[in-house]
Length: 253
Length: 278
Image 1: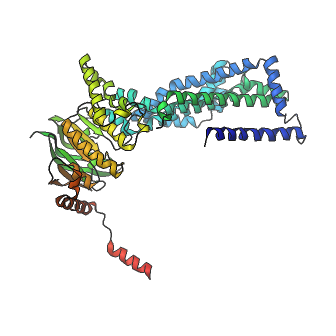
Image 2: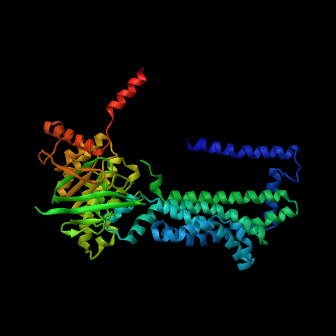
Image 3: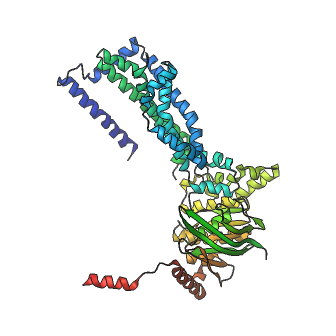
């Protein structure tokens, strides 16, 4: 498929649901209080921006997401690398991680609030719990997918264990690792809302909760759509980095 | 002549749960310096295991394996290995792949500037020798399978190994590309003066390349027989039609079929087809 037909189809795929939404909202079948029109939502975004400091909400939410996610990556990548590389570490840690992974992160919220309080740390902590355990296992899997022949070839050229990790496993797994970071960033946004629903007085998730109290459905819509748009933008940024950082994956003769 | 490789009663047992599988039983083998030995056999005969034991990628249960007089305890740069596929580094260019060993401490220790120059010259020489000069800056994914294997061979030769171990290196290539690669590997191994152990499932390939053909048998994996190839050292494609070539080929094929334990039950097949016809 050509680039052009891809983008025209993508435009249709986005336009149709919006058009349906508009028709449904303006037809009067549904009460405007419960289903605001796209125009109401856009208008609300404008008011939010000019009167309610939208940028501050976006800023604090993005800060929480990125910090929680980055902390998680900082520990998960080296740990996943060890689990994926050394059988001893794998036996030691993988079952435990697997076990914790199935515990719902949301259920940790009361505990997090008791331990860390309701400051920034609590929100970042919830995002961390939500992403970390999945990330460790995904990184370990990325590392395990490095073809054995690549590793063994290095060994027959005289590479030490450390060199195999640094010169083969890490560069070989890098594209998959970046994809893992991209996907877990999406989850971090999901947990942001959870974190802000519970204990916050700023941020996009908090704004959504507050809007519910005042029956401002248009603001709820605006918040949800903004989070979606920010997530999409970050996702595309990751894809761009992927293309720039790994030219060999995109080079074709 | 001195032995490049010497195996004495080598056994290799894989333990899978409660069952033990004997991958290699009492393998005793000498490969002369500069020899081209090919290894064939039915699947499960341990030919790849033997090669991996020689490479040091696989341990052995008992016996002794020495290369150039030194006991094999793990992989080493004096024993280069070429794999069937997926061994190239896709993030490096062709030249980057060939120069890869130069990043490793073992090849950079105590290096002088003239060594660096020599190594650089060697990478260039290999690039030309393997016919890769025009794709030096391409990535492996941009090359055909045959060209990728040329890169793998060049990279394995970069460290000047005394022994080159090849595990079905042309198994994924088409017939025409294979023929070109056969003449290339014969030429290069003679030029580099290295000992080659070449595992394949293709009997014709084994006879064409090998000075001797080692036939292994499965269950337990063992050496069945060794054939001297009655062809002059300088090989040419026309020899594949020579009587002695064809005779040896059918002899080895029959022997492999005999050791594989897999026989087609012709009587049963006939009975079944007769029943189907009725």
